[in-house]
Amino acid sequence: MKNKFKLVIGLFVLSQHLFAFTIKDSTFLNSQYLSENLNKTEFINSSFINCNFIESNLDSSKWIDVDFRLCTIKNSEYVRNIFLKNFHFDNGYLIDFSIYKSRINRVYFENSSIGNLEFHNCQINTLIIKNCTTSSIKIRYSNVQNIKIIGGSIDNIEFINDSSDLVEIGHIQCNQVSFKAGSISKVKLINIKFNSSSQIKFIETKIHFPRICNSDMAKIDFTRANFNFETFQLLNDYKCDVKKFSSSKSKSIYLEARDMYYLLNRQFQNAGITETQIQFEILMNEAYYKSKNHNISTWFSILWNKYFRGHYGLSPKIVIYTALVIWLIFGMFYIFLGQFTNVAWSLYMPLDIHGKVITSVQPRFVIQSTWNISFSYIKYCLLFSIQQLLMPSFSNSSLTFFKGIGFSQKLLIPIGIGKVLSFIQYIIGLLLLFNFIQAFIRTLN
Image (cartoon, rainbow, N blue to C red; front, side, top):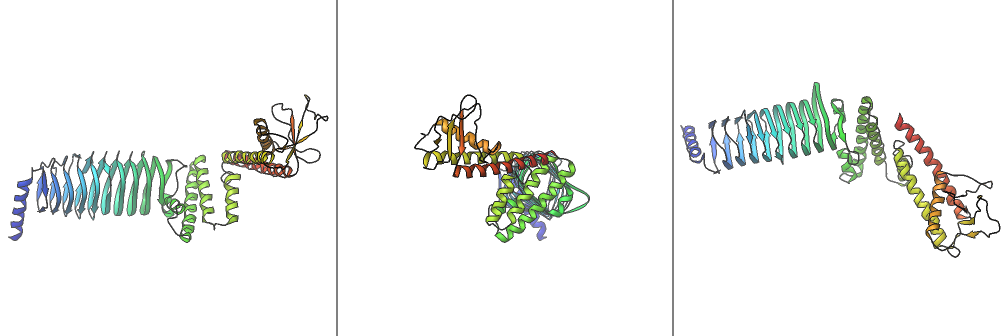
C-alpha cells in the first residue's frame, strides 16, 4: 500500500511537470514513459528508479545531475540535441540508443546491458562505460575528449572519422575494434581478452601517442594507420622523456618500448612497408639508448649513432645534415683563426692563368695583420672547409691543400694548427661518406 502511494505521488508530480521547462529535485519510482513527449524538458538533480522510457521524444532535453538505476531506455529513432551532464546509468538496459548532434559531459554507464549505442556528430567531454555487456558501440564524426570502456564484454566498437584526445579500452572481453579515418592523440589498449577471431584495426587513422601491451600486438593491425613520425611516440616512452617517472622505472619502460617498437617494425616488415619499418627501427634504437645510464660514453654513442651514422644507419638525409653542420663549424674555425687571432693557420698564394703558383710573389700568412676581413676571405674559408670535408686530397708532402672551386686563382695551404684542423675534417669527411653510402644502401633493401 505504501509503495502504491509513492507511485501515485510520483506519477502526480510527473504529470504536473511533464510539459514544464524544468523539473528539479525529484525522484521517480516504477514509472512507465511510453511514447512520451519530453522535448525541451530539463531535469536537474533528479533520480529515476526502475523506470522505462520506450520510444519517447527526448529531443532537445537536458539531463543534469541525473541518476538512472534499474531502468530501461529504448529508442529506435535518433535523439537530437540532447545535453547530458553528470549523468549516471547503473544496472539497467540501454537498447538502440542513438544520439545525434548532442553534448556529453561526464556520462557514466555502469553494470548495464547495452544493445546498440551510437554517438553521431557529438561533442563528448567524458564518457565512461564500465563493466557493461555491450553488443555495439559506434562513435561517428564526433569530437572526443575522453572515452573509457573498462571491464565487461563487447562485441563491436567503431570509431569513424572522429577527432579524439583520449580513448582507453582495457580489461575487457572484446571481439572487434575498428578505428577508421579521423585522428587520436592518445589511445590506450590494455589487457584486452581476445577470442580466436578478434582483431583491432586502424584504417587511415592518425595516431600520435598509443599505449599497447606487448602481448596484445598479435591481434592489432597498424599497417593501414597514418603515422607522423615527427610527433609519433609510444605514450609511456614520451612520459619518460618529460620526466614523469623515476630513473629506475624509466629504464624498464624504455626497454619495454624498445620491444614494442620491434614488434611494430616486424609487422610492417611482414607487410612489405619499408619506409615505416625503418622509422620504427629508428625508434627502437632510440628507446634502447635512452634506457642506458647517462654518462659521457653513452652521450658519444648516441651522437655517433644518431647523427654521424644517420639514425643508426637508416637515414642518409641525417648524414647529409650532419655534414652541413660540420662544414659550417670548421669554416667558422678557419674564419676565426685568420681574422680574430694572431695564429696563422694557412698560407695564401696567388696562381697564374694556368693554375701555377706565382713564385715571384711572397706568400702571405692568413692572419688579421696581413689580410683584412672581407667577403672574399669568408668565401674561401667556407670553400676550403667543404673541400676538406667532401673532396679530400693530399700533396706530395702529405699536406692537404686547396686549388679553389670555379676556376679560382688563389691557393690556400694549411700550416700549423690549420694542418691539424684540416686533417681532422678530412677524417670526419671519410667517415660521413662511408656512413652515407651504408645508410643509402640499407634504405634500398
